[in-house]
Length: 238
Image 1: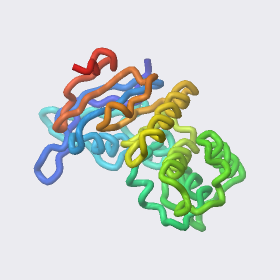
Image 2 (image 1 turned 90 degrees about the vertical axis):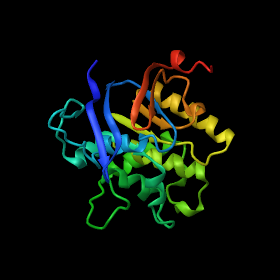
Image 3 (image 1 turned 180 degrees about the horizontal axis):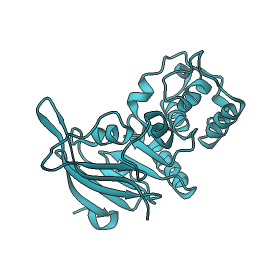
Image 4 (image 1 turned 30 degrees about the horizontal axis):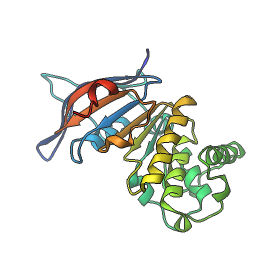
């Protein structure tokens, strides 16, 4: 199976402290994986590595290897079209009076707005509508996000990440703030996305967030991979 992500001996150091230490893992194209661990374990730092926001710590005696879709060097704009990121941080950065259509369209530009110098094509407009319909928010395109429920807003952020038809969707704690009923609906929605061919990496601290169809689990603790394997073997409830 071709690799979507490959890390070998990857560490991240900040203010003299290792946030991640000697991480080695491989995720194949089309593979769906849950990355779990408590808050502060290094999960968000992994996402920043995937997105090209930060880079591995370089140790000459143990040089890191990191490739995404088989490449170690990327134009950041191109990379962010191929990896869709859903996180609370992105959600919070939009101004309350931003329209839903603009939020989704901003995914084409990896921005937190659609600025005047951006050229929005008819093809993009169609893609925005299609992505909104896929997430069940097609009737909200003209609404401002301040008038939406948390569940609706989260669906819109996911639609934004899907608008470029990325090869990989990374969900960072996507259930945060949702009630039990909405969490169940989101798990079912992720199962539907997986069955439609969307490759998902789900990052969470809550085991109940993991969709049924997600079979592999990577456990992170104190910046290191604690274990990695089939969900049925690792999550035994004991």
